[in-house]
Amino acid sequence: SRIGRFGDILEDLSVIQKMTVITTSSVVMSWLVILVYDRVATAFGSTGATGTTWVIGTITPLVVAPVVSAYFVHLMQELRNARDLARTLSITDVLTGVFNRRHFMAQVETEFAKAKRYKLAMSVIMLDIDHFKSVNDKHGHSAGDDVLVGVSSMIAKCLRDADVLARYGGEEFIVLLPQTDGHEAMVVAERIRQEVETLEVLPEVGPRIAVTASLGVAAIREDTDTLATILKHADAALYQVKTSGRNQSALAN
Image (cartoon, rainbow, N blue to C red):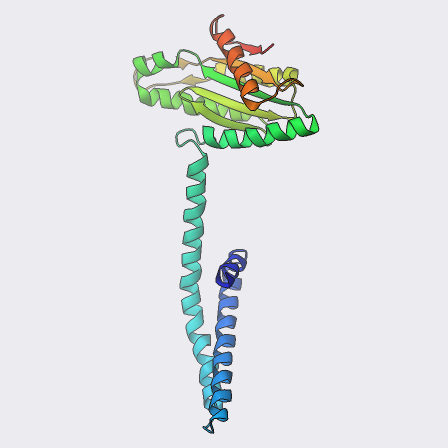
């Protein structure tokens, strides 16, 4: 609608510009109303708009419109903030602040389709925090939350802007590495593993908690027909690490 398009235009302007546009529009609308009244009145033989009418019709919106527009602009800003917050909450994990699984799947589907179409490299890293259940059991869920936040921060330090990090579930994280082959992804995985290994969490009660992680890496291949396949391979590599000692990285065959 025209009103909707007008609102979209206003969103891209500064506060002063918005108030100026609204005030100017109010004056123009007032003039149009007076002009229409003048033409109709003249057509029916009545006295048309006088100079006083034009003065009042100009001054009134100039005085009233800035006040009304300031409130209107405030409401628009509040609406934009609420909309941005709602979108952020819908795509991020509340605890760690990284993307959630649903948003990750949408991103990886797009990247997978592009990689297959243009024959580009793409890799996925799955990370599982070692013995996370024992952290919750021994130190409480608050300490477990601190571990999750710390690990997500360590992972993020090792990634590029183009990479996508998400909490995949419980104590599991997943990373999308666009235009990255398996060997390059293994380098990233090892860097992440070593960073996580330096993390120590100090609980309210008890000694510091040492943290390690297991990582499974999978890269897209010519015969990788679906997104589910590469995710399955990364999960299989992660399972291999978890059954062979943990605190390691493995590349899926």
